[in-house]
Image 1 (tube, rainbow, N blue to C red):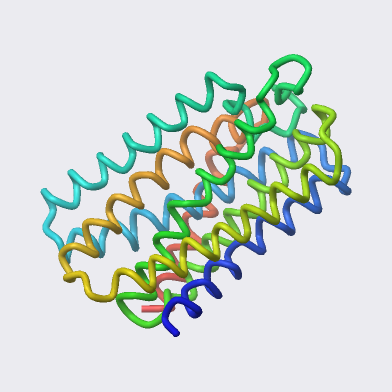
Image 2: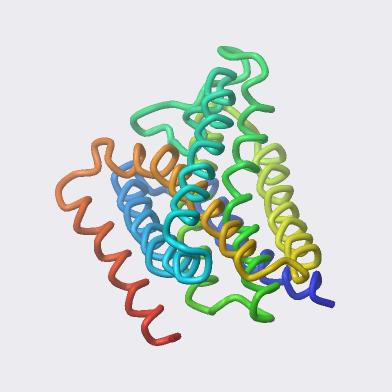
Length: 252
């Protein structure tokens, strides 16, 4: 049943993506408001990967090995993201207010690249939730909250950009439902396959996932958050960081 628990947590965290996608498709937020939401989400994700994931991996797996796994995870995501960027997925988290996503007419095949890129973005946190389930029976509620909060602006901005690029509601919903299902499946598989691994191995895998999560945040959320977002964008990111820091302290 461990896999089912992990899948459930992965699905709960992915609800932020679905809620954000609905808001992006049917809401009327302008770019500046979406960018500010992205800043808050980025701050929360940076807090959870640094204060919780990497800190725990360092304690259990050693600083040097955790750092190496962290750097490797960041590099692996960046490599995959660079490959997808050349195929039209670079701006998949853009809302269209400042930088437009490519349309299928302007960049043939970009729709598929955006689908694959969006799924790639969801993998690091899904692996983390599965690892947390394998290690302790369930992830901490603050970690799940951070992912759900971070997922909302991701879905919001990306779905708004898809709609602005001329992609229909059926395509957009298919993307986000598929991403939600993949998130649940990945978390479930990680929870099922990893309980037999040593604490050190789990720590290194967690550091790897944290590195991938950092690259995802920097390469796909922060560009939209910082582009013509107005004053105090950094303060909004800090607010997201501080709120998550306090939640992690309460959960400890």
